[in-house]
Length: 581
Image (cartoon, rainbow, N blue to C red; front, side):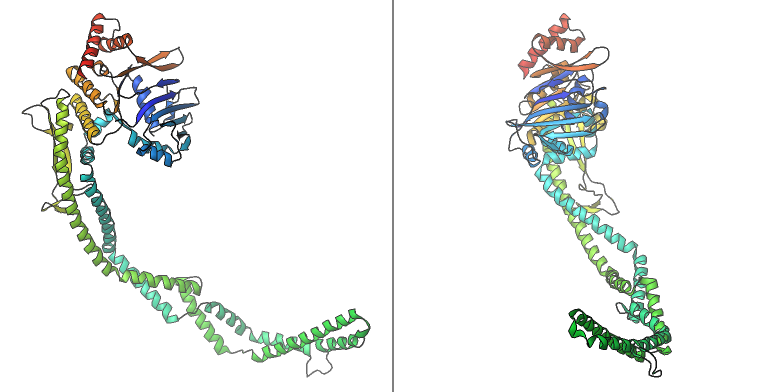
């Protein structure tokens, strides 16, 4: 049952395309046309809808923007619908509306279900909606890493479970190894750092500085260094306020204020304002008396002790040694000492930490060995089933004697390997297995890596067979094949078309092709046509039915739409396709 269908895709001002509409219905749709036209129309525009890279060169000269719009019918319970709704999108009668706008300046915007979304969301939705395959994917299949990924995808949970545990242990081993290497390779530097910290902490501890002590000593040194001047000034001020006993004729401030107070006090009862002033003069007298007393006490207590001054300067010099090395103030020095003590404790604990990490490192390697063996076992079991299924599909693709197998092996090493099957082997983030897809195209031929033993046509059919097998085990609702039939012709092309039609029974299939044998099997045949008015080249899409379809197949067969032989061959192809589905 197809739960996601690309129902309609609208393209406007995309490269040479102008306001064209491509309707992609369920089943098998073939897209043909002049070389490159179909690909530009369908593959490039669909790629934009699915979050592909946007290139401002796609915008037609003179247009402000290129717009691609798609209408996708989706099941409300599907992963794509749920993810879209999480982003704020809304379904429209069971359909999801997607649009991508690319400005001539290169800016790109995306909308899903009426809500502006990051372009990256389109890529997330694409994973659950469409599988796009082209000739570059065939080349990707030649890489062992892609072959391992294909096998793991086919194996499903049997490999995914151990692989997740393996990946977690592998990441932890990398972290432990990095920390262990740092501790061991930098042992000398860390020992030197510890010695310097220990010396500095001992120096600070010997001085026993107190918070704010440097500021207190600076104030005391300033006072002791100017003791005589301070005493003289205090004496002069005291005499000015309270008088000098040695000069009974002198006039002081206290006497003058007292006289002023007596003068107004005598008549204060006659005026409230003057009474207030009398009170204030009395307060001045009291204040003068207090200040004079404090000045006398200050002068008596002032100690011009040179021994104490020397001791203060010596202590300040000791503290200056600390602030020169460990901080601008004593507070900074004490903060450094606190941090240094913590760092020293960490450095002194390196030996214990190295022991702990070494034990964990060995345990992780042993665990990885067990998990790698579990991965090997799961992959080996899945490889047999996968290869058998692909081989069966190749028989339906005009390769009846071909046989596909998987080679799963490990590389032994004497350096930094893990033990798998009693042997130390090379390992990586995906296990210790090296997976390679082998093809024996005919009886008697030894299995060889498909990168060396498969022609272009054979590689196209192998990839198609792999996708058909995936469709049965891990179905994707829509497949877009971009000229995957390259290098295929004759009877093989007919079998490719027949197999694509079979795949279309369980999924939506869109094929960009130049082979009439493949197009003949399609439920719907679209042709991309170019027109040129002398200044602007435009493309349009036309659905081929009845006589139009026969003419298009004739053109594809012989390059001549009106050739009687080509028409007869085209009609024969259509009849054979209808009978062979």
